[in-house]
Length: 225
Image 1 (tube, one colour):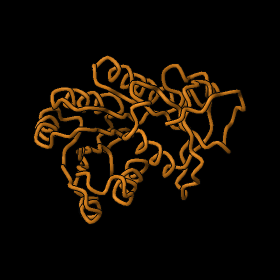
Image 2 (cartoon, helix red, strand yellow):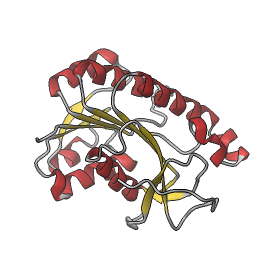
Image 3 (cartoon, one colour):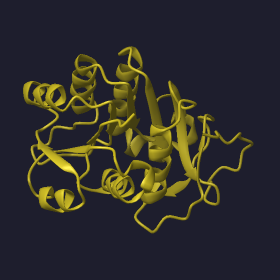
């Protein structure tokens, strides 16, 4: 079955790397992909990659819901977050609106990109980092909890510190909430796209780190897809 993929937050960062992976990997070559963008800045670039583009702000519920129902995706990936121009964070509210729309559209699976330090992984970060990221991590935890309570089949991926460098191929997943480290955005994209095709990660919360860049070398079990 050819499944439709809806990617929210494809303009930059992990979202852009996911877009690249989906459009260059043969496993996804026949899958229709729709990217949700807040404005038209990156529309031409994404369309050149073979991706359909829908323009809407995830903070605006009505338009977002209309798009989701129109596109009728099977799989949703959200990398929504960060501080927009108007100063209103989308880490919780934007994802909440996306989750609500996905429920109404009857999607099969929702993958949320969160962060190590969110929820029960707070102990993985030093207190100074937790304090600096407190407001962001609170919203990310709210988004995680909202998704879990939504009834959707979900996967929550919490990357470690992100780097914009070529993939190493050493990205791994683990259910251990105490692990921390760094990982390249392209390797996160690889793991996310593997999760799109794996039922093993359904209803799981997984940390994503580079196996060679772990900060706290504690015993952990790698989660195999």
